[in-house]
Image 1 (cartoon, rainbow, N blue to C red):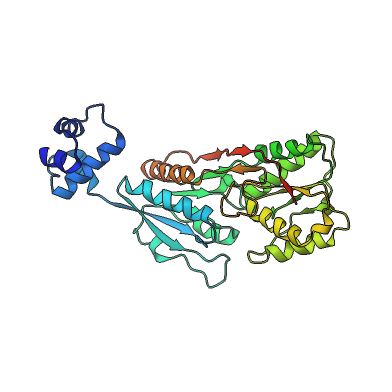
Image 2: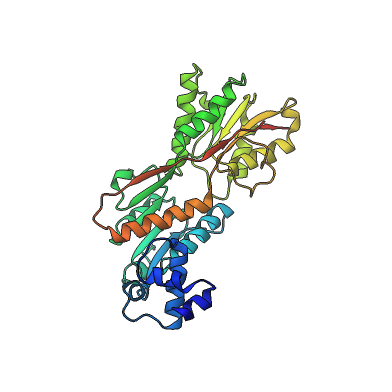
Length: 332
């Protein structure tokens, strides 16, 4: 105990408390003591120390993880949190779209991993293949084509309906009436939720949803700028405001209006969702729903640990609500 205390710069009493399961030691410090004991070879005769020897692996099933800092921040925090529980996060690549030649990677079938976290998978055929795996699973978001009740795992969703309802209401309260929406509602359930929140808010305020100023059809991963520019070019008269499904979309809007300022002599309202610092041209300018990606990564790790330990527990659907940051939102 003294060796471990010296190595960590703590008291021998603290080490004694850990070994004897006494209160008064934080979970993080307890983990450090057990890890140091393992490192120094002191594992015999203690249940926690014997248990810590048994490493587990969780697969991160993901497509294009480096496409945005939104995803990399989540992944980094997830890996950090799982490591505290002696669980390795193993990257398992998935293509962005299904092909007839697709085969589930063998790592997901040969008992190498004891669980899986699924994120950034937005092809329904790929998700159906993953859904058939018998290992414990946690999904972050899903596709509209799959009923959440049919998922064979837990589902975490960023709350979008109420958040976008409130953002749309804030625009209406400023006196704006012609309000459009931009976001591929076939891409993700969260996008569809956000669109439905926008529609409900418009209806509740006695305003009609004008489909002509809404871009909601499928948008290719690599064609957002082209699709958005073509859509805006087709509008003879721009609306007063646009509610965007993400800051990613909003930053393309800013790029377009930067090149077409004559179309908005008095500016135009644009809002987003995600609160990403990545898009500097709209950061600190637009109203948005701020997602705490670090905490989201931690939440995913907690959920997969629970699911691995309680495989027979009923599946859960959890909505995580972001905080709304209200800003002027006027571009140019």
